[in-house]
Length: 143
Image (cartoon, rainbow, N blue to C red; front, top):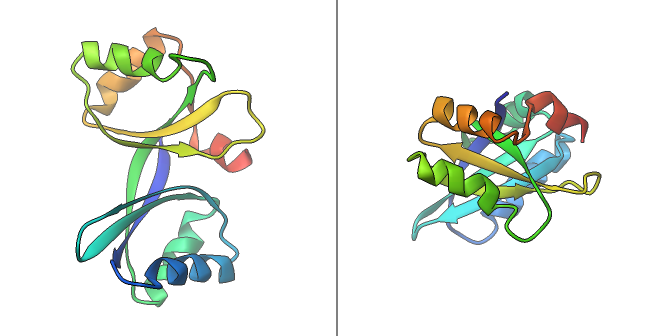
């Protein structure tokens, strides 16, 4: 059920993001979703890509620190309140969303959001009870 996300730690300076994306381009890795969080000195670039192993190898070869994290890809109805239909039951059951970001998916009528939760077991149980679709890593690669 989990999707795998890679996280790259980058200096917060001009050109570093372009350097990362060029490395991935040259390795023929497609970025499907991303989130960038920054501080004064560094940033954390979180990515869903089509080939984690190739991405990790190419980035590490160029000296970047790369981590892997399990996340959930969740289908969100493309309608007013669609996101709340997911967030409300999680909140009611004390599941914290540590972060989330959108996944580009032109082939689907609904949106896909990438979530990191503080309690995956509880989140998965709630999502299943509410018949909310969780998209597997393999399904993400095929979109």
